Amino acid sequence: MAPSKVLAGARVVLPTGTVDDGRVIVDGTRIADTAPPGAEVLDLSGHWVVPGFVDIHNHGGGGASFTGGTPEEILKGVDTHRRHGTTTVVASAVTGDLDFLARRAGVLAELAQQGDIAGIHFEGPFISPCRKGAHDEQLLRDPDPAEVRKLVDAAHGHAKMVTLATELPGGLDSVRLLAEHGVIAAVGHTDATYEQTVQAIDAGATVATHLFNAMPPLGHRSPGPIAALLEDERITVELINDGTHLHPASLQLAFHHAGADRVAFITDAMDAAGFGDGRYLLGPMEVEVADGVARLVEGGSIAGSTLTLDRAFKRAVTVDGLPVGDVVAAISANPARLLGLYDRIGSLEPGKDADLVVLDDAFDLVGVMRHGAWVVEPQLG
Image 1: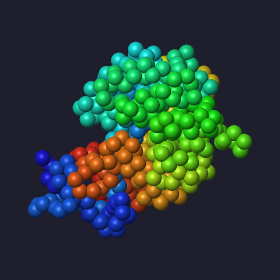
Image 2: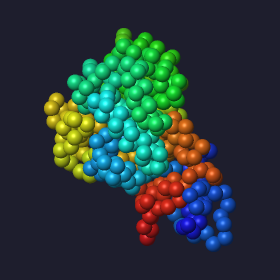
Image 3: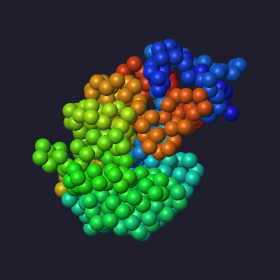
């Protein structure tokens, strides 16, 4: 076992606030409250230490797709995001044939069982053709509860979230089914009205899939799903903070109305994340990535992102002007609570997993630790 470590001198972001000249004690794989004799001391003066990032909506990275890759390729994608601070990731699958998705769920469930991923998110096929985004319209289907149950069962207890257009036939019953099985029902890729969205929330929906994107815009006579999702305290709203998916004013609107405790930063990353421009497949759809922006070759719709959460963190602080504590809540604590894992991850408290990120004073990532071992070891002057 690696020697115990004391990360000293940094600004440490805790649930109670930021501690200047603070320290984090790592003993084995966990955070400890006291340092054992002989602990290794690392001086992190001038740096920040924050909890490891938690991404609940991610389709791949490093050239690897979570929907179509081999287990080895999927692990490559997971490692790519770990190196950018995401110590916990949920693997998201895009729309596909139902039998194909059930088989993929089995592959991903094995990786979840091993602890490599935190679970599975099905984004489609139960979404609206009117708001399909980068999903293959020919493979879309109404959310029949029996078919939703088939995917949940195929995940062998590791299904964490299903995105639904809840206004479609079977939508509300599917939300109730998911809630009964402890799976997050997320409203997204939807053409729902305000009233239909309220019904979905009352039925048990608790997440808005990438708020603002793939849903009707906010209107003054027809407010649509955005108003319903922002105003209800039962909903956590996903935001893709890459500068492409959202105007900064939209992000500020979400934080103002939902509050920092109801926002979850996500990447919605596809396999080009951390890999580069070029042509890729997102499920069966061909995607062109140019200057870091992914769009469908046919039609030009935005097709996921190439975002990593370290970039989302830096942008939130340096461009959007959000307090560091609010960003930590959105990128670590809130998604950890959604997954039911806050007793283990999401904050720097004794007894929790030693998952953390070290940032310099410009909020650039310089270190990543997962379960007490350095994934990216800080190289200090």
